[in-house]
Image 1 (cartoon, rainbow, N blue to C red):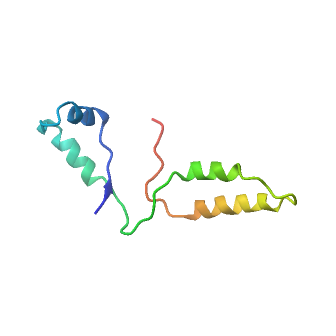
Image 2: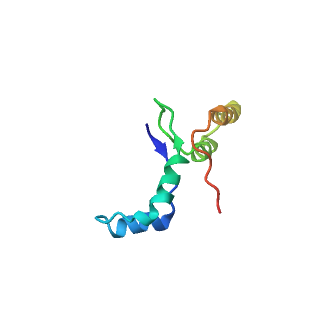
Length: 92
């Protein structure tokens, strides 16, 4: 099983600063991160940032008759309809 976990940066820094030392005082935080992790669905495809993809769609040129612009909206709607595997990260 693959899961996505959120570990505080100070714990990651501690682990990188002393790779041969396993600080047991972070055990509870690490265990909490694992138990609160988001399991990835078996057989999931490539995980991408859909906002970046939609930004690229906006930059696609329209055909001379302008019809392709409508397809831009359809493509973005199709992306928006896909199930969320990992929620958007908040700014705070």
